[in-house]
Amino acid sequence: MSSLLNESDLRHENAVVWLENPDDLDYVRQALDKTARRRGKPRYERDGRMVGYAELGVDAEADPDSGLQLRRVFFLLPHDRDADPDGPYHEGAPGEAVDPRTIGPGRVGDKTPRSQRGSGAVIAVTGI
Image (cartoon, rainbow, N blue to C red; front, side):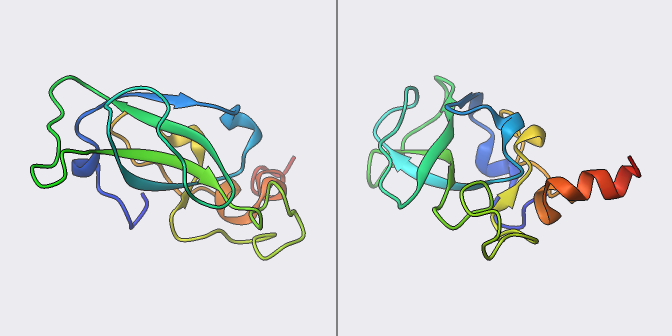
């Protein structure tokens, strides 16, 4: 499980929407963003690209100070493995990265051999 998010942070999630096929990605970064709505594609204001997001159920309450919802966003930066296979994450992954195949509503996701060491690790681990 990612050390940066807790499943208690995600208790109001009821869906994960992927903008790209998660089977094509070794890992995704995840973060909690404040947004104006519970559902629909949130605004994205980082470098790189958003590859998915979580939608919240009707029971999710807005922050009393800001009036905004806390939603999970999945993203990749320009120097991540998918765009720069020989770059800094040729092996290894950023701290907030998890295998997108292990993510679900209310579930943080896991670090796996594929997310941490790349697609080639799957072959080495299984012995194929």
